[in-house]
Length: 377
Image (cartoon, rainbow, N blue to C red):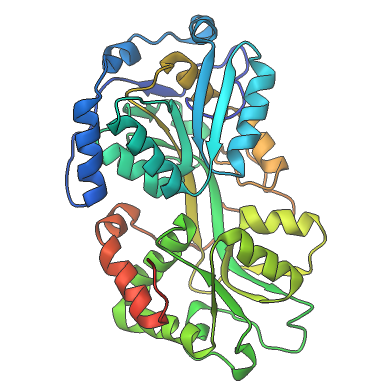
């Protein structure tokens, strides 16, 4: 099977990820990358050789159990699922995890590495942070070997890392609160919001939320500066509220306090739907947005074999099925669709060039701020 988070592969599975100690020393563009480049220059222990020497199969299990522990940073919803399942399968490996916003965890990793005390073995979090870490040379390079088992969406064109699950970004509203109010059909509807929407819309900050950044970057790339700006100015016209986190926005969607989410993610909405929330989830006519959690193994991982085993586990059929049962879209071809959620395969999606969006990050954030009137700082 694969490498980095998720449930353990079946005993006869073969590795779906090949890891090497190769690093991508592409120190460009952002201040964040420059800082991480400095970090890696001061903390390059002899990990590349250790990663090359990793075992496979039962030898890998034995090597991972000899290391006896693992540290995982990442997404607050999926990482606990992974850690619980991995711990049940491999009780001899003690797993410590820290979860939070993707950039919060990324900056923690940078700080620890710069101090010469790297702790993290594996990151399982929003793809934009994994791309940034990869470009800074802080991840061991690995690629999917058995790609035929996975949807094309699982494998980024740039290579060097693997996606673990998908979050679909769609329209969501509280159908009880919106019973007699028109609902959005496409992104452009927000450019000329009905007066009835005033005070009903909630959104979040693209500077701190990876899913929000993916959404705003998609509008920037698809509609352009002017037409996309009209959509954002419509939020200001309708007196949209800026929420501090996706969880807050989802709670206000559930209660009807702010019954229109400018967008929401399937991972969050699936949870409140299971609680019986009267929420409708639809695909915008111009397309939804797919935002992924991705797997990355630190090139200074203190426990490289346990990290390798954990990654295999994350991409196994067993763990991907566990994701689906928890309302998360898996990325294997044999993954079912989570109950009550739209299918990923065949969905109309905006074609987001995330690496380019990261290069344009400062411009996109400034564009969002100037049109909505919200500060991203």
